[in-house]
Amino acid sequence: MSTQYSILFKQEHAHDDAIWSTAWMKSKMDNSETIVTGSLDDMVKVWKWSDEKLELQWTLEGHQLGVVSVDISQNGAIAASSSLDAHIRLWELDTGKQIKSMDAGPVDAWTVAFSPDSKYIATGSHLGKVNIFGVDSGKKEYSLDTRGKFILSIAYSPDGKYLASGAIDGIINIFDIATGKLLHTLEGHAMPIRSLTFSPDSQLLVTASDDGYIKIYDVQHANLAGTLSGHGSWVLNVAFSPDDTHFVSSSSDKSVKVWDVSSRTCVNTFFDHQDQVRERVVLVQASGEKSPQINRRIDRMCHTVHESLFLVTFPLKTDVDKPSISIIHNQTN
Image 1 (cartoon, helix red, strand yellow):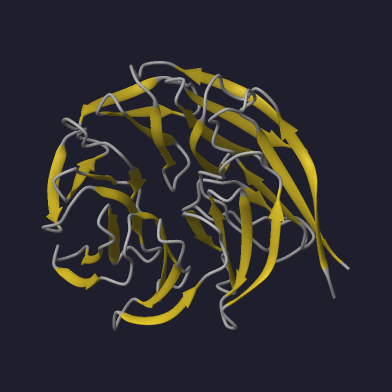
Image 2: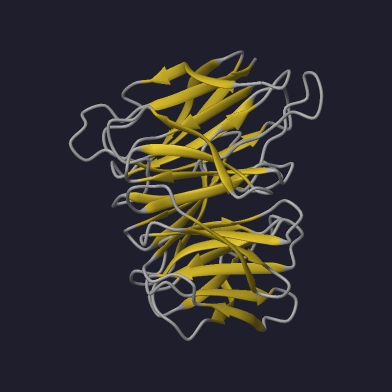
């Protein structure tokens, strides 16, 4: 049995500058999907994916500098965006209206992540703190102190028990959300942690670093379960499939790799972009006919029907004139 990848859809000129972050969520109202993109053109855009077509719904203006992170709440009602202007903005997806703007402080809004219950937003600080904002209050509720350096990446575990942060010095910290206690400090990487993701059962944590390695950790015991190599440069993002069997990585070497969790091997590598694949990719598998599963914690879109995979990646624009959206389809023979 072999798997083949091909381009299913590509949206040229999606933004006027680099697409730095994306988020995906299945609509609660119909069978469509909502995609949010953030760009260095200062814009947040909301797209609708339906019937294999991508339609621009809203262009959201408000940030004064480039948008570096976006996320969608689990209930699908709100999008959050963070910018180099140090503000976090909340947007109502049904109307495209801004509902809150939060001043996170200088250099303190690099990444945003909704909690699984959609009540909180976590963002990383240059002082090594994870600041937790209330969605309803629009205010900082509390902080988790890593006692480390600039936090580049944050992930909540799907079960809501843990929060992991990755810092510029290669240190990873895992917190107990209920108590705020620092549970584990992981020092397996030698360079900045660009991305981390929990497995759907919250038992594993996969991390990506500028050192070119991907590491797999046992969350409960903080044991290193595997070290993977294969990318030729920085590993910029990782994301799990909902069935726990695969995860996907993207790199500044312009490639996307699909990994088998049990064998710790790369099962597919494909190239589509002319530049770095900066943002996150994810692999998903449908549980049944016409029942697409969407992984909430992703910044690259994937969508499955009849066991097919639609995988969406966004290239980082440096000298490329067309920031674009690509949907790659796989077919198993």
